[in-house]
Image 1 (cartoon, rainbow, N blue to C red):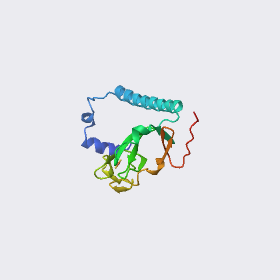
Image 2 (cartoon, rainbow, N blue to C red):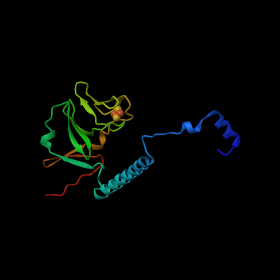
Image 3 (cartoon, protein in one colour):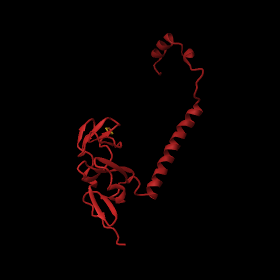
Image 4 (tube, rainbow, N blue to C red):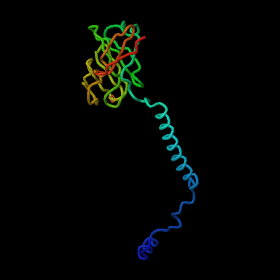
Length: 177
Ligand code: FES
């Protein structure tokens, strides 16, 4: 406060000595240590994540295809789903009520929560924010902005005793045994 008139105006009205904090729960040293500790933690976390990405470049990436055992999926009841791992995400093998089969990414298009199939309603439900999709993956209620990624992985191929679920447009060529 450089202005003397302002200074005297304040000092007439307020007792600055009384306003001083006598006791604080956090000392300056604790405050600075916490600040530095937080920064160090963030730095180490970032470095560790970078190292992980370097060691496992496919980390978090979705695969072009996955290979499933046909016997585990082809005999599921009509109007039901069975989960499989689509990279680090949920995949759903889906047998419609007419027996036709397909597969989809079991992840909501709103904020990527896992979805659940409700057989009696023939709908997919996302419990995170009450989002609904019909059995064709169309978003019909709640916040999801677009349909499920149904057609990305609907190429279902039988190769020997393998069931291959692949992204649409991906040509899967397996090495010959
Ligand atoms: S994440 Fe599915 S409705 Fe929000």
